[in-house]
Amino acid sequence: MTQTIEAAVKALAEFEAALEKIKSEALEAKRRLVKTALDEAERAKDEAIVKAQELANERVRTGREEAGKTAGEITKRGEESLNRLKAAALKRKEEAVDLVVRRLLGG
Image (cartoon, rainbow, N blue to C red; front, side, top):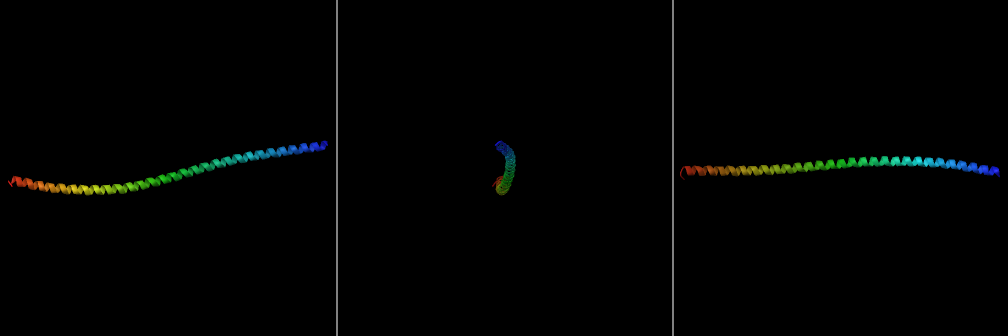
């Protein structure tokens, strides 16, 4: 019976050693899994930042293009308005010259 008890104790000791080894391996696997998850999260964050920056750059580019078109249209309308104003001023100047000449000539 002593041998049986010794064999049982030995078996339990081996089982306990195996269990400790499994616990140690599980803990190491958990550490690797957490590290991998953190690395993946960082990679995903970096990708999201890059994509957000690309989107922002695209929107800025589009905004600049639209602003350039609008500025061109405003400049064109301004030039047209200025030309009309110059033409009207020239016409009024000619009318004023004619009026002054008639007045000076007694007409």
